[in-house]
Figure 1 (cartoon, rainbow, N blue to C red):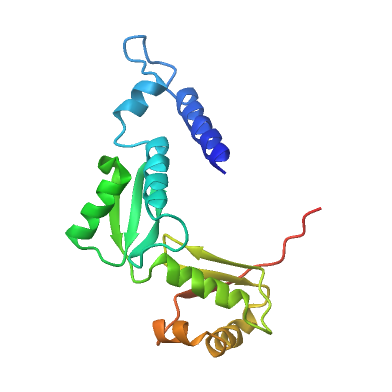
Figure 2 (figure 1 turned 135 degrees about the vertical axis):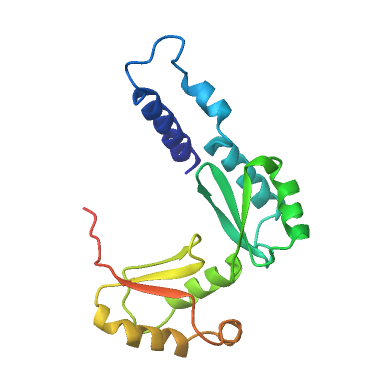
Length: 186
């Protein structure tokens, strides 16, 4: 996965270099490394900061306030259920590169969403094409082949939630159901 991210970053840099306007003179031309150095943050720095944060947790489950993180506009957006200044300071220090961090307050921590995802996968009598946590939307996305079954699917999920999850999500589940067909790989 890491190698893929590095390859993607290299491809984006190469694309940016090739897309520079042809009419620029030598004094106006800028190298990709100059542009990267001037950018407020880069993917490489964000990846390193994310890895530092994750490694600080010591493996296993994440802290309850951590809703995961995502890369957008070359910033690492850290999702927190506790958006206090003290909590933000904690993550700024953990990252080792506070300049590239931005914060977003979310309703659910990563542990809760992953537990909900696992419970959905284990729900009997539902057919789904995909189930996954959407960090940017702070929810679980479920793809089902027949949208006419959406209401029934939600009922089945709610009926089979483990008690601790039913307690954590007493009202509306942070679940988005959409139509998705099965993909067959050959």
